[in-house]
Structure formats: C-alpha cells, structure tokens
Image (cartoon, rainbow, N blue to C red; front, side):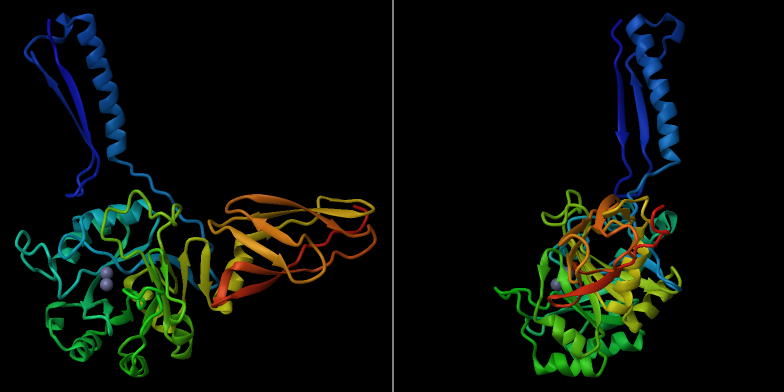
Length: 402
Ligand SMILES: [Zn+2]
Ligand SMILES: [Zn+2]
C-alpha cells in the first residue's frame, strides 16, 4: 500500500490568514481500520498536529517590550516610518502589522511615498489603499494603525512624513509648502525624515526653509535616528526649535532578520500618552512627550528619562551588613540595559545593569554608618548630544547591625 501523507503549515501571511494544515491521502477512500502500520502512524501524527494547530489558530505569541509607564502616561512603542509594495517597500501592508505585533509595538504608521511608486506598472497608484488594507488586521492585533504618507522632494529640503491624514490624495502636489499646508488642514503631525540622508557625514543640510517651516509649525518634529543612522547636527536644531524627537525604522524590506546594529529591537519612538489611542499618540507628539530608542541609546528630556529610569530600576534594602560592607541587590526590570559611570564617591566606578537582570553590589560602608548616596550618570540615557542623565541610586536603609 503506497500512501502519501503530507502536511503543510502556512503561517499568518500576506492576507493575514491563520495557520492551516492540510493532509492529502493518496488512497483516501480506503477505510481507516485497513491502514498499514505506517499509514496508521501517519494518521496519528496528523491528528496530533491537527490538535496542535487548532490551538495555534487561537493563539499568537509576541515578544513584549518591557518599559515602565510614567505617572499619568502609558509608554507606547511606535514606529512611524515604513514602506510597503505601494511605494518602494517589499511587503504587503498587512505584513507590516504582523511584524509590528510580533515585535511588541503599540502603533505603526504606514508611510508610502507620495511622489515615488516604482511598482506602479504592477500595482496602480492608490495612496489610500495601504492603510485600508492594514486597519482590519490592526484591530484584530490591538495595534494602532496610523494613516501616513511620505512627502518626497529632492534633497534638500528632503522628505517629510505626515501622520494622521484623513485623505492623502489632496497632498499630491509639486509644491512642498502647499503639501504641508494641506497636511495642517487635515490636522496632521509632520516631521522631517532622515535629515542627513545622502550626506556622507550624516550631517543634515539645514536650509532657511527648514527654519521657516519649524517656526511656522508646518513641521513639528524630526528624526534623530533613522534605522542605524544618527543625525548629530539635528539634535541641537530640534532642541532650539522645541520640535518633537522622533526615531523610526524606515524599513523597506521584511523586518526579520533584524537590522545589523539593532538585533534586539528596531529603532523606534517611545510615546508617553495619556491614552492608548491614535488621538492619545497625536496629543503626546504635539506636546513633545517622546523619547527615541536606537540600539542601546535612549534619548529624551530629563523630565521623561529620570522617572523612566527610576521606575525601571528597583533597589532592595541591604540583605546583609557587616563591619565593612553592605550587600545590595539592584534589578533592572526593563529591556534597556543601563551603563552607569560614577560621578560621586561611593559605589563601583562603572556599574552595568543588564536588561531584565539583577546585580549584586558590595558597598564599602562601616556597620554603624548610614548608607552613602550613589551618584552616577547613565551613559546610554541622553538628554542632549553627549549629555548623559545624572541619577542618584538611593539604597533604602535598614538599621545598622541587622
Ligand atoms: Zn525618505
Ligand atoms: Zn521612507
């Protein structure tokens, strides 16, 4: 008896379909009790697989990003810049939803180029379509999908993303200012993309026009990071104009495998929002409540980074004090590894708090003395270019001798 049993498993794909399993039998009409040993084993295996697949069909797994919320604000992980086959990207819009959900994000914006559709011979220009294709799956995954578009002019002035658009079509124009005014009419949030792109040093060419657009709030933010690139001369410019700090992947390819220098997470913007909705994100972007996370660098204002660090790091009272030392456990509950350099007198000169791990610290202090304050700077939390966040690690005291 020559039976063929094949199973094929299709993971959630371009159409957002759930996994399915198909078994083909070469002699499907034969009753089961007349199967050979091999055939019986095959069917048992299929039944088991069917049972497992039925479970899988009800359940998807994602890698959460552990970052604490701040008082009054939820910390939302967002990527506001990516492409699909509707411009020069390589994936269907729903695949961006699957990737983002898998990567632990809260929100994405699909931002295909308005002026550049290299695939239009195969896929006619349809600016509204990527969002429409993605929004249903976004709702299923509880992922916020934002309708966006990339205004794509020569460099300089360059490219600009408009988020929260209701209709992209009226933005089709050769005149940048007209496009930005239309975006404003639609109550959009606009930021300058990859400002140092196509410049060898990644130093952006900042024109009087950029200053003018910032002054008129026609652009309200700028990318400090885009994928693996950082634009150092844009940092002081953004701070001078009080623009919102943004960082995104700008992915064109499937996002798995991860980018070379960001094996653990994609470049993203953290948004501190009053509510986990598109409007909540818009309000926070307008108010400048963001931080940018690229590689191990997390950058934002001290008002946001200080409470974030304090909420992420738990310091236990000493579990042992002897005549010379106190022994203390410090736990970093977040997914950001912290690297600290001592700025005061107590504690080790370098202190590393790896993501999600506990560090045991021996602090030199006589038994009857109060515990010293541990003053440090967190080298990878930046409040401006080359400005690490100062922190004081306060160890809760226990009575000496205990
Ligand atoms: Zn661009
Ligand atoms: Zn882009």
